[in-house]
Amino acid sequence: MRAVRFVGEHAPPAVQEVEKPVVKDSLDVVVRIAGAGVCRTDIHILDGAAPLQPAPPPPFTLGHENTGWIDAVGSAVSTVSVGDPVILHPAITCGLCMACRNGEDMYCAATRFPGVDGMDGGYAEFLRTSVRAVVPLAKGVAPATQAPLADAGITAYHAVRRVLPELHSGSVVAVLGIGGLGHIGVQLVRTMSPARVFALDLAPERLEFAVRLGAERGFSPADPGFPANFMKASGGDGADVVLDFVGEQNSPEVALGILRRGGTYSIVGYGGKLTVPTVAMITREIRMLGNFVGNYRDLVELMELQRQGRVAVSAKEYPLTQAPRAVDDLRQGKVLGRAVLIP
Image 1: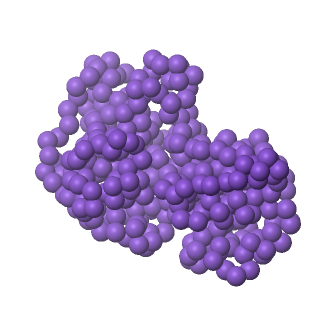
Image 2: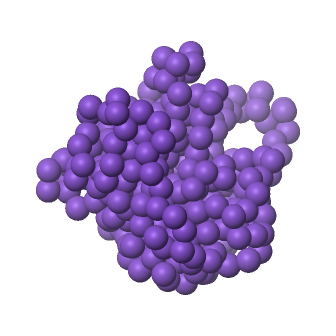
């Protein structure tokens, strides 16, 4: 079968012929891929900045946002059948550790992360995973373009869910970075809370996109009048919550500069560094949250919102063989929403 492989740092992803995966364990499933989302984490891996350290050695197949149809199942699998359309939680978890038993799958002590930790992912025609990662799709849902919800969506949902107790009528949420995650984040804040939503991005077309998705207004942190204009529009005190879907360059400084006293800085994107004077943490009583994926229940709930039409993915489709182009387009900011590879 065809697969897109990480073959070395600073090298473009390579389209290669590899063996089709087969069931090895009683809880295994093999999925025929319908769509695989292209994530900035894939760029980090290609650039030698993999999120998991030590970085897994090449080669392996990329891709951790996957949807498709069940192709084969292990002997103990009873919840899905061959041909069923599914979306896959990005992590494979053991189900036995205390984290798994508490429903916090992303803390599993034995997590495997196909496409990230060296296990083959879904930039391919087929993928082997565990039935524990499988969420059946509702009847009539086309799997391919829903692939970004498997990571971009679930991570945004997880981040928004965690700050919901702080949001009430009149609360202000700033969504920083209107990309693959941020465009979903805007929708989730609007549909899950009564808060006012403002969008922050450097690209005018992304700010316009965010307003179409429900943001009240968009701001560029590069504008001379920022953050004064943001403060005025938001009521003068700043944001109750900043959801930072960038996490690099100067995004932490931008976020902290518009956060009100007692506010929460919720970090989703990564790649940069965060330096905060401790006196600012004390005198302003700032809270900080880090967010890593989400649990199985998060994905189930997110897919129900998608089924109800309350959350939608903006996806630009590329043939699997054009994966290098899709990665370059994402790197250059040419993708509005998420790029999805179609085998």
